[in-house]
Length: 241
Length: 325
Image 1 (cartoon, rainbow over the protein chains, first blue to last red):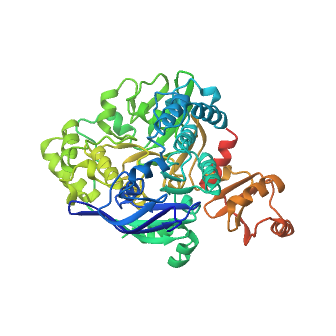
Image 2 (cartoon, chains in turn brown, purple; image 1 turned 90 degrees about the vertical axis):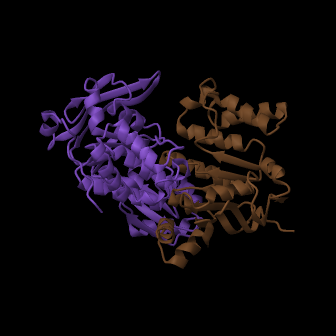
Image 3 (cartoon, each protein chain N blue to C red; image 1 turned 180 degrees about the horizontal axis):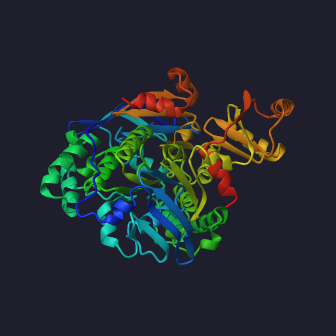
């Protein structure tokens, strides 16, 4: 029995004749920060949806958080957290209401939810904005609120879908401090990003191209292998064809 | 690649001609607030004809508000704005004729094909029938989207959607392009391709005002304005804007840069300590001597393989200016 947080063998997904993902082989350890890179249309979103239990694969096998990707995908959904910075929150609700909503969805007991809500609002420094709609919050706050909502049920694996898009450089770094803390607590983090400096913060990265992983390793390994000084150069070298 | 023509549209007035060599966009003391939030605070800018001008800054800086007001989509309440001599407040129709605008959220029709989207916008802008065929051909060459012309817009990848959206804004051969974060959420390769297209357009004489949160894209512009919380922090040639960084900057090579950030901030009392990819950038009020550097390396809790002085970059400068705003 493997101890991997995420493990797949030859995972694939076909839509009609189109192979969106093929030969996906992953073995991600608990507490790892794994960067999932690739051009738009390379198959990243399809791959992530399979790993989140949202889409059944066409071929291959996989286990996420110890559960089978085909038979136990409902259990996977309960054990993972997913954050999409631009789309996770309900803009017309206040931060407190968003927390209550997500807590409810994840089945938190009332008492625990109220405690968490108070703690989170305090931690995020949102007590003053308790009555404001989420829409009116600066993006940096929204981002951290969305992350907090994704963590309410204490998932062991968390998927971050371009969590820092459009955010100022300082807030980006603060967000990555949060990611490091989570990894140190043993959480496994999958992150997709188009900021290549963020690729450097990951333990390992994979680059997808036309449905397949064409490179996988630590940033140092990949830079050495392809003789490049930065992940940006590695990416451009591999994807620009 | 065939030239994209940017001749003035039929019926151009002498106002356009007079401003050809001068500043094509002028913004004076523009302010805008949404209730208690000051979105833009006394912004003044002049953009010359044929310039590729960048508004650099994070979400909430006021870039979109400024662009939408310029495009006459938001009412101009405080300040003045002119495009090619036309007043943004009064000459709405004239401005819309010479402007191409690409909003932040896509303006494409997802259930229409590439070809249908282009035809739709051509009709919307009243492009004459003879012009239409010619224009479509040029835009297909330019965007490399012809092989996908029957694909529905919703099935295009992010990079392709950007190119289609840009093509739709160019369909009526505008002299001035306003692009709101056209490369957000797009991979580095597609971003590079997109900027190559912008540079080509600039060579054809189009004036381009573009906004982006990606600091490295600033270097691709003639001039940039750093925006943060509604104000301009600095306005300059991007190669010169780094002169606003007041300290001596050093790059530290260490296996886990984030672990040393606190050491530099708290023990060494550097002015700043920021992680940049696999390096740490630390700044000091004055340059360090070799002895000081050796001492820092020796007493660091993590191994440092190299510590050298570097020129500040765009992001270093932006972060420094943000601190004082």
